[in-house]
Length: 156
Length: 117
Picture 1 (cartoon, chains in turn cyan, purple):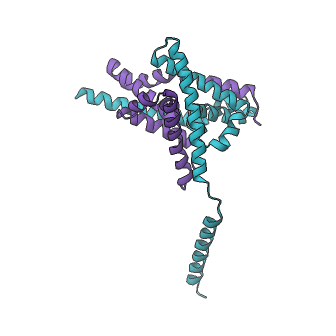
Picture 2 (cartoon, chains in turn brown, yellow):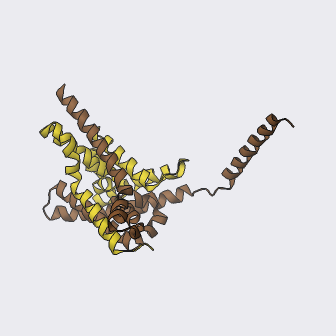
């Protein structure tokens, strides 16, 4: 057999293998995942709305009430992650527990907690930014781009 | 009524993220989702497309991380109008200051007080 056809055969085998992998890989139950994401994500936002309404009723401005709501939700997300409950919720809720701001707090605490044994400064202190870092970075970069474009359009 | 719309819109924003996780071939981690939501939220907000959603759904639009991006964008736009160049750099963080500080401080406290399961 020539080495050429040998290589071809190898390629075909690889393709067949890939097809087999595609076939046996467990498919996520997309509909069920979406229903859970909708319910849990929706409920977290409903809780946020209740907290927002509470601070509004205390006479706070919309901006201040919104900021206090974010602080409260972040506190809850951090606490529930520490207790280990948020990750249990996340197994079912998927994106429904990631996308609300409680999920941001969850990602921060979960990555920081894992690295406790490396110390409180360079373990927890550094790893706390392994998710918060990229998120804030891209948020800030987007904000500066937006600000720059706005500034330029004002000059014209 | 505001609770119902917060539930529906907040839930739908999460479903979009879930579809992104399930339907794309890439390994999408929570980090990718968070970065994507804050960035897209900021640009949608700058184009004036996010505020109507906030007016309509309240916390349903502000609690998902796209609302955090919306905060950054609106803070920047306002500050640029009043402070010029300085606002480009100060406006976003000023508007999101409470959330950022809370996330880092509460995150640090929780990581110290609790141990992973």
